[in-house]
Every structure is written in C-alpha cells, then in structure tokens.
Picture (cartoon, rainbow, N blue to C red):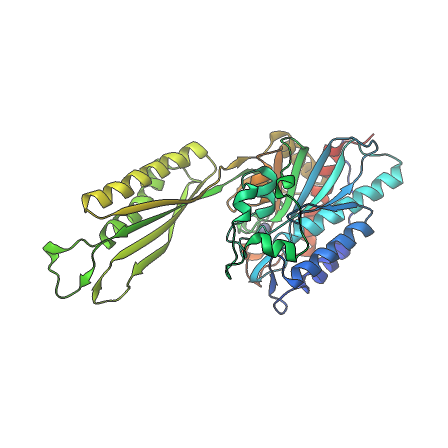
Length: 420
Ligand SMILES: [Zn+2]
C-alpha cells in the first residue's frame, strides 16, 4: 500500500540555500570541488544535518558519506537513495544537491511517519552522498560510485592526478581520508534497491507540463580519440600531388561519425565530434597532427557497439588509404543501464496515488545511478528545471517542483523498504 507523506518544503529550500553558500564562487554561482576547503566544510555540514535527522553516519575511504535510517533488526537488508554535492566551477545550486538534501528530507518524513504510526522498517534506508560525481578535479566522473561498483579499480584510482600533477593518494590523505580503497567496493546486490532523485537537466518535463519523469534507462557515453599524423610543410611550397595531409582523413571521419549514428543507430543514438585539434594550427602550414575526439551515446549497448565498430574501422581505413599513421584510443566506454522494472512500477504507483503527472523517459546525461545499476536494482526520479538549464548559475527548480519530487521519493522508499 502506498503511503502519502508530509514533507517540509521550506526546510528543503533553506537547506539548499544554506549549502549553496558553501562555495568557492559568489552566489548565484556555485563551485565546490573535491577536497577543497569548501568541499570539506560542505561535508561536515551535511554530516551534521544527517545526525540531526537521527541517521547513523559513516564515511568510506574515498569519502562517500552514508546516513542510515536503521530498520528494526541488526542484519536487515537495506535500500538506498542519494546523489552528489560537488559542483563544477560557476554552476548552479540544484544539480545533485536536490537528490542529497531531498533524500535527507525524505528520510526525515519517513522517520516522522514511523514515530507517528508506531511502525518500523523491514529494510534500512541509506542516504548516500557520492564523492566527486563531476570530473572536475581528476578528469573522471562518478569517482565514488565507480569505486563502489568496481568499474574503477583502486590501482587505477591511485594513479589519478589533478591538474597540478598531484596524485589522488596524496590529496586524499591530506583530506584525512586513509585506508585501503578496495574497501569502497560494495558487494553485488548489497542493496535491494537504489533510487536517485535529480533535476532533469533537459527541457522535456517543462515543455510537456509534467511534474515527474520516471527514468527507465540511462544512456552511457563512449568516447574515442583518433590522431592522424603527416609530414606537414609550407602551404605554398608543397604541391598537392606531394602532400599527405592528416586533416583530410580527420574531416572524412567527422562525417562518418554523423552518418554511422544516423544509419546504424536509433532515435536515442547520438554522436558528437566536439574536439578537433590541429597542429601547428597556422593558416600557411599543412597540418602535421590532427586529433579528433568523439562522444557516442545510446541506451542500447549492442546498437552503440555497432556504431562504434563502424567508426573504428573507418578511422583506420581512412588513415591507411592516405598513408597516414593513425592512433586510436578509447577514452571510456561505460555500458548504459536499464532501470529496474519493479522500482519503476513503484514510482509510477506513487505518482498515481498523489495524482502527480508523470511520464517514463530516459536519462541522456549519466549519473551515479549508472554505476549503482551495475551492482543493484536502480531507478531515477526526475523533476523539471527551468528551460532545461544545468551546469550554469541560471539553473533553477521551483520549491514546489522539488516538494513533488521529494514526496515521490519518500513514498517510493517507504514502499520499497516495507513497513512492519
Ligand atoms: Zn548531477
């Protein structure tokens, strides 16, 4: 049975406002980067809020923070919710934080419900603040959830460096996080369910006038770097018949990426060439080196693989045909995730109970949920944000929209945790 829960919208808003001030840039810009002084202050602030709400707080070796609303027995299974508090430079105050502070309010409301009804939980509920969802400091997104899921090994994490060349290990220990990173890894199915509340970061819900997006799949990016090299030369002196110009295969490859997504992909297949670097980059010089970087995303791994294989084969063929040395490097290739149908159905029933307008949709951006989905049944709840804007100070979600999201999350969690 779905229970309607009361949440305190003003308290969520004031929590969000308070956190937005713990920032390295002036309001309304928010900048919170992993293990900076402001990030450490925000962490201490959050742990305080969790304790105030009666949660049992722990932190792992990479700084993922867990606040547990304990079930009755000591060895009960658990479910979880959560998101991230870090913010890229000069961004907004809702990305991630709505899922963390909204999750906190959801647990407060569940606790109040239990106290009022004298019931208790069959499964504990963890609120997780994931470390560094944004790739700002170490160039890799979802550091905390990747280590939890084992997608990133402790050895790979040890070797990460920030822009100043300092190793993660050294920065981590300065932030007082020590111990073996292998301990961050969670067992498969350690949680019976994981649900993340997040702003949509796209315009769909607002355009359709809907209150809730129920995420059924999360698209995952794969990115590829291709380098073509040639002898270069003077733009006037080297005749066309004597040239081996690396910009030509690069240009043809850009068209190929677009065509491959069109011809082999579906509606949810997207391919972008966002980086083209030409060296030496002078108008009177034949390029000596051209690097193109491409991002190809889909919710269907097989379909994405077909597009990637065609691009990869063509990248080599274009270089070979022009006698131009070609180097190909995978930057990443995370698998997309399908959300758990039982959790999706629960969210749908909750929306129907509250009479919130909703629609199933896919997440085109990726989140910590993408990695949680590798180790436990996962789904996401989206709320609309103004003009679909995110990662900018103009990012905005109304208090009413957040309240609807938190009620949906709270009732979903209560249903999944089962009361006894
Ligand atoms: Zn986010």
